[in-house]
Length: 490
Image 1 (cartoon, rainbow, N blue to C red):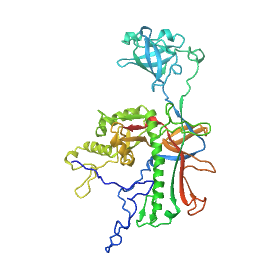
Image 2 (cartoon, rainbow, N blue to C red; image 1 turned 120 degrees about the horizontal axis):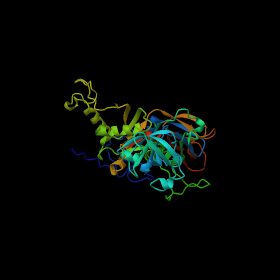
Image 3 (cartoon, one colour; image 1 turned 90 degrees about the horizontal axis):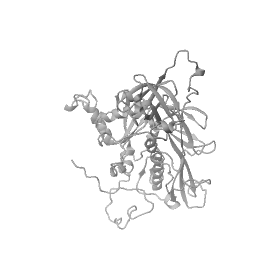
Image 4 (cartoon, helix red, strand yellow; image 1 turned 30 degrees about the vertical axis):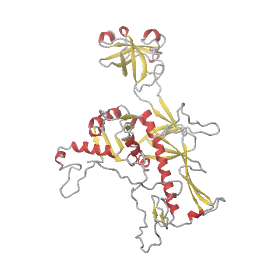
């Protein structure tokens, strides 16, 4: 069955008066003897038009008094690295990166006496580390440019080549313990000098300033209309400027959330002017999608389709979460197509689903409405709670973009529930914060969380302008902590 979308145009905010948005008495025959049945109330044909509320469900808002927010995140506790065999017969391994692909040639924590598990794509071996050195790296490794290498002695054979390892094999090296001879003193442990110190990563984000305004002349503010207006902010009556001002306010509130989701930082080759010492210019800020794309995970499904219809995608998601924080409870905010696909997938898990007798809630009876939706499910040790995200469905927001650009469409996002403990550089102590929260500029005398003020001569007189100007301003940024626990569903 094909659905033909509505083709009629709808009213939208514009910046000037046209022949379509006022009544022409002569053209419409005001002098005629028949009185039309006038329906004064403006019809709300789009339901709730605002999309904000997402961040309020998953995060919080906090004040900040600086131009940027800096936070640190813990590194992994255990030692695991990627490397390459240099000379197989003497079991020399070049250390390249840690398990997260961060350069570790000069900062790895493997020491003499460590016991390690060495794995190639086809082989594994348990070894004892005998040498940790950087002096002869240029001659002992295959690449000739390494700055660190280790020599290991397998427990099962004389060297790695006897076990089948070959030159230039790509390896993963995991430290699982250590072993020393009886009577060994801590002061005489060869090449065991120094202790491994915890590593952390520092992230930063800067707030952006957002502005908007609404202006109405004194004449229009005192003119009554024939349409009774209504709006999301509770405005009502016959003064049209109440409608326009309320819509501007609601739109700006949505923009404050949409910017935190979509914003990006300015890159060096952009033509956008970066801020100078005087403050001119813009630098952008890191939004939710940008943070997940750079520091989190992305899934495009299995075999290039909306794989929410298959548990295989969720099993792959679980595997990624297992490698990171393994946070048990997760919120899924998805578009309508993905939500329905998940419902179909979960219903198909029920052996009675094919006959339609127990689709959705499994205790359906003939006297109750059939529930075709699921709000959550448990897979492995993870709980997933599903919610529709209006932002991904509305034609005027991401819903329209997704309809146009199906390759880069965003199906949803998976966000860990709960809070994380991080070190706050400005306060100098560990704090517990939601994984996702907004920071806005504020001090004892000025709060820029959501600032509104009125200027002009309409109402309270502040200038000689024969108009009322309603100004809106906010300065804020988003903090995405532990982005390695987030998943963007493309």
